[in-house]
Length: 154
Ligand SMILES: [Zn+2]
Image (cartoon, rainbow, N blue to C red; front, side, top):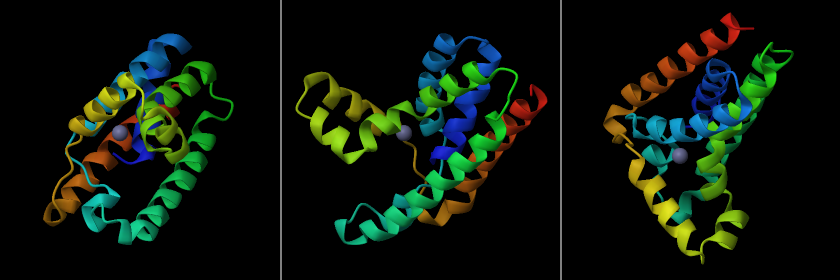
C-alpha cells in the first residue's frame, strides 16, 4: 500500500486501542495486513527498473506530502492524539525501516534486517497493471474507513 492508508489505518488502530504503545505495536502489525491486501503501487506502473527511478520518486513525493498533510489535518488537536500519532508511526514503520535508502543500506548487512525485509516484501500483494483500478479502490476504501473513524473520534 501507499503511505496514506498505512498511516490512517495505524492512527485509527491507535485510537481504538487507546494506548500509544499498543497502538504502535498493532499499527506495525496492520502494515503487513495492508500490504497483503491486493493493491496498486508505483511499481505497478514503473516496475523496479533503475531507469524509471524518477517516476517512482515523483510518486513517492506526492504520497509523502499528501500523507503529511492529511495526517496533520486529522491528528491536529485530536482527542486521542498520542495514541493516534504512535499508531500512525507503527503503521508506517515497516516502510520507513526498509524503504529509506540510507537506513536500509546501513541495516542490510545485519541478519535480522534481511529476514525482516524479505518478510515485508513477501507480504506484498501488488496487482498487475491491468487491475490498477481495483488496487486503488482497496486503498480508497481502507483510507475512507480509517479517516471516518478518526473524524468520528475527534
Ligand atoms: Zn510495506
